[in-house]
Image 1 (cartoon, rainbow, N blue to C red):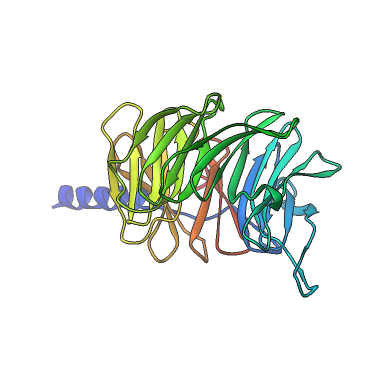
Image 2 (cartoon, helix red, strand yellow; image 1 turned 120 degrees about the vertical axis):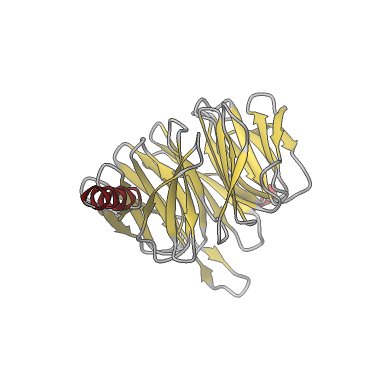
Length: 319
């Protein structure tokens, strides 16, 4: 009887440890709703829907500066704040994509002192996000699912590759900037060479509907889908998917590619899982709205945001 009690207690303790929830270490509050963010050298650069990129000092855990984009002028003379759709950082330079009134996009470069417009509505491009390759080149994708390499020094397209007819949804670059992975409403993932524009490979076995987010680390790909699936394409292993009971709006990978995470349930939880086995790990609780962006800064620390004015910092060392 005593042995039975001991075994039962051990099982309960083990399950409790396995199911232990994690809560955010701290929360940053933005002035506007968060569309994107990027981490760089102890600071977080946050793209908002009120025409700003807010800069947070993570050691002080407070807003220290912001970059304000020019307001848009309507035909009736009213002023409208643009939405900042994406932000990226490289060598103290910032790449910013913002909306215009006619559906096309502005792309800006900020060098720490001055804001310079690289692409305007005259270019008639429906850019959704842009990411640096190096100091003089960046990649962007349009809603029509063209991936384009652009030289910002000489203002020209190095190449433009039309990936497919389905509407573009998300993109990411490999860590060495040699590949761009793009996803669409078809559920397909395409890898394109960033130097030539040549399509290298496609994946389409795990999602049957729109992919909201895509992540790529160390040869492993995961996707977040409208079909309530997390698609997993391991570097070494057979592709599989995880079924969720709610639309999966976001997913990400740790830098090693060994740990995945995705938005889970109507309660706005985040769920960690092991890539090699698909086994669930800790659950993260704290979001007030649906999480839409998750970005790791190392194996144990990451940030997340959703359709709200908060950015959450998580530390997996602290449980």
